Each structure stands twice: as C-alpha cells, then as structure tokens.
Image 1 (cartoon, rainbow, N blue to C red):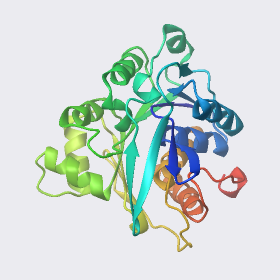
Image 2 (cartoon, rainbow, N blue to C red; image 1 turned 90 degrees about the horizontal axis):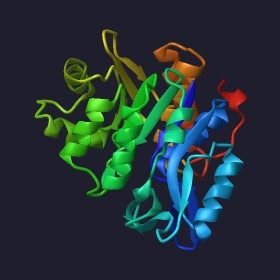
Image 3 (cartoon, helix red, strand yellow; image 1 turned 180 degrees about the vertical axis):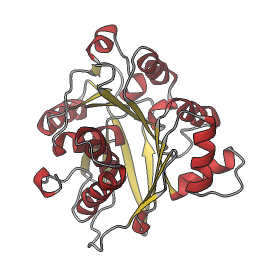
Image 4 (cartoon, rainbow, N blue to C red; image 1 turned 90 degrees about the vertical axis):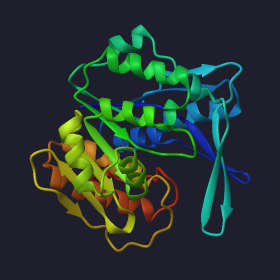
Length: 291
C-alpha cells in the first residue's frame, strides 16, 4: 500500500535555525522510514530553501517526482516566536505550497485501490491548491482518504471543514480541534463518542482517530468497540511532529502490515513516544525497533 501526501512543504524557522517540515511531509517521511513507499504532491520555490528542501527530501527517500519548483513564489516557512512555553507561528503567504498543481501524468501514475491519500486543512487555505486537491480526489479511487483536522490560525472555515468531512474515510483530530468541530456541528458534547456517531451516520468516515497528548489516543471504528492506548512514560524532548508520526505509523501498520486496528494503534503509539523523546519532527530510527 502506497502513501500519497498532498500539501505543504515548509521550514520551521526559529532564530537562525530552519528545520524542514509540514505535516504532509512529516507523515510521508515516517511512512517511508518504517518501510513503506511514499510520495508527496507539493511545491517549493526556486530559491535557497527550495533547493535545500529537495535535497533533504531526497535524503528521506520520499518520492519527490510530484514536487514542483516555482519561480516567483517563495518556499513555505513558519516563523516561530516563543512566549514562555507557548509558541506562535507566522506563515508566509503566498508560499509555493499555495500554488500546488497536479497534472494528468501525475494522476496516471497513482494506483487506484493501492494508495492512501493524506491531506490536512492547512493546504486548503488557497483556491489553487484546493482545486488541485479536488482534481486529485475526483479522478482517483484511493483505498483510504486520511484527513488531519490540523487547524492553524485562521486558515480554515466551516466550508473547508465540511469538505474534509465529505471526503475522508479516516479522520484525525485532537482534543482542541474536537471543540471547534463539535461546535460547528452543534453537538451536545465535544467528545469522540458523540462525534464519531455523527460522522458514521452522516459521512463516509469509518474511522476516527482522536489524539489526546499525554492521555494517549482513542480510536473509533464504525460498528466496533472504541479502542484506547496510553502513552508510555517517556522523557519528552520535542512534541513537534508527534501526531504526524502517529498518523503515519497507524496507516503503515494497519494497511501495509495488515495488523488489527488495536495492534496498529499500539505500535503507532510506540513510534510517537520515540519521536517525542528525541529532537525534531523526523528523528532517524531503525524501523526494526517497531516492526
């Protein structure tokens, strides 16, 4: 089973340090590091950061063939400012990933029924990228569509969230985001049980993955009992990318290794625990630790 991510490639910039990231790339990188095949549809600028991004993506062994280098639009970046233990992010706009294009030749290379498509809400902030995603979903038949309700600043709307719900088969959300989505849907309780019940009755979503930080993760699957897995007691060094590693690992173990949902979530939690105990969103590891 191949993973195809769609969305932002950007650098997290803090002081003089710029670290490659973006949730879609993080997910593709972890899926590949675990042993699966992954690629990403995105764009970078024809600039120094763009060249660096392509070099680092090559090192990650993620297929870069659907990444376009654009003239006149800079590579994405998120400038980070710390306020005590909290951080704020300023995204440049427009960035190259606001101009993602997908071509008929790209569509022809995507294997129907053997591909998982991943995307998040952030890449839908621009009309151009939104239309490209619509083309991708409209002209392919993926095995699953994994959507991360990855809310950032004001770069989402009820229409964007509704589109995500209409197109996802697997939905990932965290404790903060469930409040926003439950309010939009006028649900009485902002919890996984009520949200999953609504999703299963009204959308094509069949799996809801709720991440709860130190409280672990809950998995709700249509017509099955809920699953909960606790985090391990690890020394937390860096939480950036932890949710992305969980997403990638769950997909890998569930669909590549054919594990049960409970076993896949257990192994995915182990991967995320490793990631938070090391610096960076994509720390290097030996997949045999988890596989």
